[in-house]
Length: 522
Ligand SMILES: *[C@@H]1O[C@H](CO)[C@@H](O)[C@H](O)[C@H]1NC(C)=O
Ligand SMILES: *[C@@H]1O[C@H](CO)[C@@H](O)[C@H](O)[C@H]1NC(C)=O
Ligand SMILES: *[C@@H]1O[C@H](CO)[C@@H](O)[C@H](O)[C@H]1NC(C)=O
Ligand SMILES: [Zn+2]
Image (tube, rainbow, N blue to C red; front, side, top):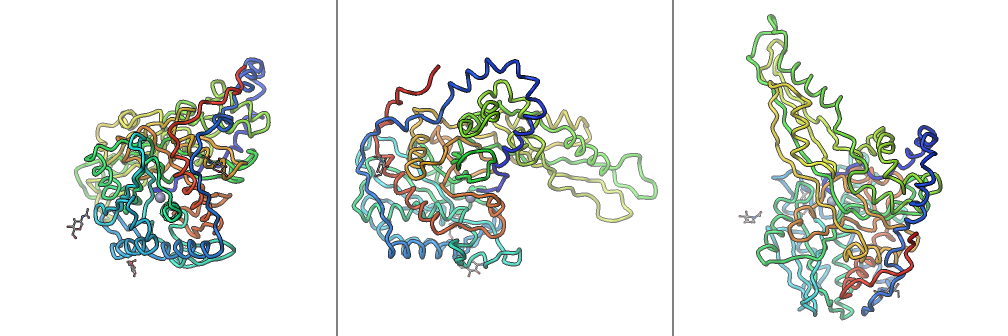
């Protein structure tokens, strides 16, 4: 991901609600409990009869395991760092290209696969399906990583791929070379076993995701648009399997990202006539700007919890909580405002409640005895699904409420559309089935990405973008993202390969089964 935002890890705050507010609404209990009983959204299509596919199985033997881990480690050792929008390690990107061709010879030589380089360092693969009437899909991953330095406190050098206690350490193990290598390794094995897909699909590997994807992903999109491609769905990185991270939840949860928050960077500036510090005016550019910034901090964007897709997360997970949490979570129509107040108390859950406002830069002054003419500040906002970029800009204008403060949008975009997740949603159900076949104890739920991914550039090519890989996150693992000691267990990397191996085959069905008839309805 571009930005390691806080993860969905703090349902424990819901507990506070119990003591503080619960009693006051006991009267509504009877109405609400009817809803609790009727909502078990997790049954879905899992009991239905799925169309048969060839279903080649992957049994990873000792030699194969050694080989796939060796490939993965080699990928980690190539420092494909994006330093800034303008600067990346192009030597490493070229080396990575050579490495892929060597590691996956079948992918690069199969008559079913068309490979091309895009924007010099990004890759686009088309794997031809036997049935041209089935709408293709796209698997996305990115080659580049954020910088890492051993001196930041890594237990192993960040580009060493060193093995410790069953884990492989290194920048990119989670973000995003696990997915990238998992996808290509799965395809390599499938092709070696003589597999030919029914449904054609693309694999896109961007080389500058960590700095916005303007070259890689956007060029891939341009190519696909030129060819008139429409996609059934896109699967990219984003959310993961949370294990022991959401307190109160029984068992792990696989959160599939169905949207991403929007983003805006806004520049505030105040220009005054410069002067000497011996005869200061009553207000300086710094004072005016500081007051504006303070007003923005004191007046956060409105609480919108329950107005975006976050309610879906709660509804899907509710049945895995004990009472009274289950009750609260299945009755958001009643509890959303209350819950919003609880969640906003901590920065990581506040991010789900509203558009967040962060003042990230403040510049003014060059000399101790000169009153500067110009003071500038940058504010970075992450826009909640229920708001637009324009609404956010209007609110900033009115909150600042001072004509002397010039407000400019540096860059920004609206929150991403919300992808479908119902029983007719092909991508969501395929991902869900693949997860549940592999990990039967996991609960699958939709989630929202706080950071952004390359997949947002593909929104004109499909209605359904999902952000997920079955990377297991335990408490504390979120900090490894873009942080120190990024790692993945050897077992988990193997699971990624198996996941894509099954997912690709599961996509071969013509259409989803009819929903099973015994879905609880009262
Ligand atoms: C760029 O990558 C190459 C390996 O491909 C490596 O030798 C070199 O040190 C890297 N440069 C920087 C500045 O990290
Ligand atoms: C690709 O490389 C060529 C030649 O080195 C360069 O002129 C061009 O700008 C590059 N394209 C991108 C998108 O980086
Ligand atoms: C493929 O086989 C596995 C195990 O043999 C099974 O769990 C899965 O449901 C099958 N998938 C399909 C699409 O038939
Ligand atoms: Zn990433």
